Length: 396
Image 1 (tube, helix red, strand yellow):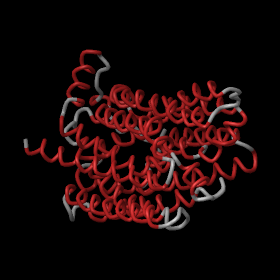
Image 2: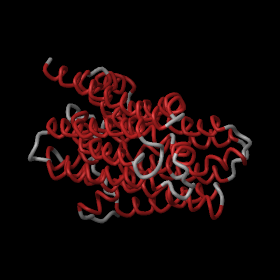
Image 3: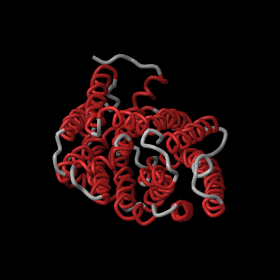
Image 4: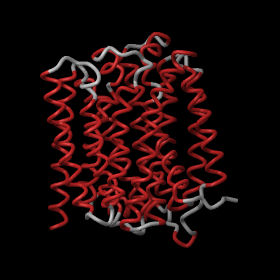
């Protein structure tokens, strides 16, 4: 039996479910050097634990929504949390880097359920400006997790070693399972559930994945995020090598960036109903462009150091999160009867781009703060181009 939550508490629960995925990335970043030493792995092999997580995350994200459309939202989330907790506990006992790759893949398979189904739940319950406001509230709370995660990971690593980070993940998943079992409602009535028949799924996936407007707006979301995400992926080198901070000081990156996410999401919620979604998106791109120019100027004119090397990330994430809720809803709006499956496709495409960024792009950019700044510039330009394609597809 579930109990009714206030809107604020409900947003907090959805945000925590959505944050499980990025939390699984950020918490163990400070432990990269020790993981390499303990498991006799090279820095690239340790880096590939991110790809081992992100690629299965992307593939399975394609199915979470379809399964939730058929079986209901609540049941799928509870099973996914259970699998994530078991996989996290397994990581504690890894003795080879190959073991960690396999168990991180299991984490990736299960961690995406929260973000996929959370988006579908928002659209189950709300429309228009109300949906944008709730999505903004979710993003505000969601933003705090990546800021806290590397700090928690850094201290756990310092006190108890890298395996304690995965103990923490397992306990976190167990606690979240209990909270969801008690308070997460079922938002999809039985009469609105969809078939898992292969013919129906094939037609619906084709309908979603061949719609130009959906592909363009999802690409914009993914590319905008990658402008910041390359810094997350490069955090151990960016912070510890280039900026000279310790594994306990990852808040220098995640603190300003997540404050920017909170501010941008708050602005998006305040502007919902006052500006059109496209106007919010346009203002978001203006702020991201300003941040990119500032980042390039700082990286070329000043030596790498805090606080100036991280200040542009605050500005960038303000713009990114100002545009994010409107872009997310624009992608899902055409699919009123297949929201879970459409959210799956959206998360699949975003996670696939993130996986490529982790495995291919970030290692090419982390050589200096200047190359990272140019990487941000490239991603925001591509994101703006994808948004222009979306506008053209709408007019067509």
